[in-house]
Image (cartoon, rainbow, N blue to C red; front, side, top):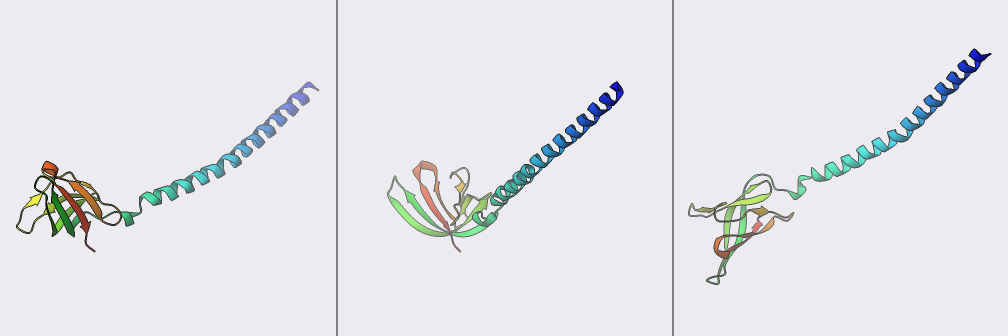
Length: 129
């Protein structure tokens, strides 16, 4: 009789542990799927390139201002974009301003950026479409 009790207890233990395991798997599986779906939605948001400009040279309207002299002027120049930042402003005479003369900054979704240059000079840049 004792062996039947032992077998019965083992049987109950196996069934109970299988049910518990299945319940855990059923409960954890949807949360993993939901987490994955949420992760995919967030990931696709960050991969959306509609707010970023590809690396390259763009025509832009550049409003220049020198606070020391009060001089301001609007220029139509090419600018270099790297990682959605304006990094170089090219002048029509072959000159340019790069990291040594300006602090690169990120374009907004409309292609606008306000850049600070040396000696307080500023450059408002709008990518031309």
